[in-house]
Image 1: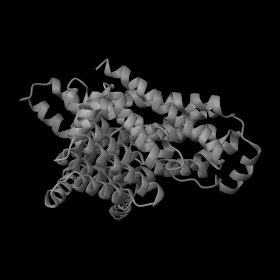
Image 2: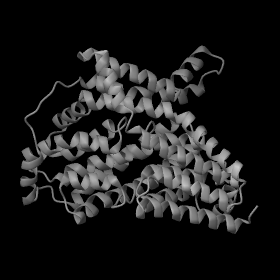
Image 3: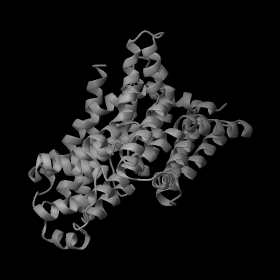
Image 4: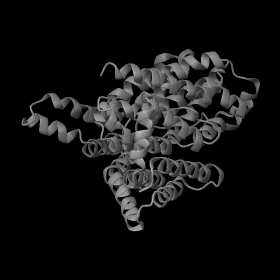
Length: 446
């Protein structure tokens, strides 16, 4: 077994390799994490057979919990996308709040509609509506798009059942219901401050002269479609969250009672999402005239985008498994404990640095969880749920040119690189700092 400093050097080299392969060589994150896992295993002196076994156990242990959950979440998001549910929420909020509060409406739309869909899907799904509003009111696209993007990012990083948030919840052994509740408490104020309040300071409300030509080219406000009702749409989105949160509150019931057994069963993520998918099939599909063949087609279309996410999360689980089995995790835990740094701040910092370096919030969160987890034994009083939120808060920040989300926002809003950095990147940095502050405050209350 190598000494502690040698093991830490091995880990440092593995992290540098991840960054180099993803950013410079443009290797897929799954392959980069796999290569880093083997670097840790070989560098730490693990027997080759044990290294292969640790990799397999890491992948299986992580995806055994997550694969079906991510699959069901993908179906739920596709049903919301294909039915026009997100558009229904957006139009209702815009009508209720008025065009003068459109930035607030888009922030709320992102927060609600973003629960079952990935960041890029949610943004691309709602951008046509932003184009229409901007064209009618001559409001700056940044004034509408940044609040939407920030709220989508906050939900993406801090709220299960999003894949990365769900993955670190499972890795750290946290309670899913509590993570959802804490995530809502932190994410909503974060989205408000870094969204509609921030854009008032950093960009003008009035559209620049070049925006009219951009909208003439990209805006199509002639198409309309039949949209689902608001009530059923909201219930479809919130149903799995309510069931999972209910399981956490069931702990106050007698363990041998029937109510405890039923609520605990229904609140299991697999069961909660299964119920939500069945409800979505009816509320957003069969009830509106879709056939079973249509539902099958939507379901099949929901799976291909999930392959990359599943592979990245599986490789992240393998990386974490090899860190533990090689002894690198214990060496890292000892070094981090000696820093005498608040573990919440440390979790936030590691996730933020990884996101800044590799440009993927998912990779950043899973890597951070793997590095922080070994030291939690030295801090038994720190809530695992709070650590999950801290990691998510760190991963929100520093969304810049290495992140595909940055380019989605820049290109769809038709702004310059400088303007995107000034408004969107700065908003994610602010969101990360606000979320950290709220997480620290929450840690003293729970």
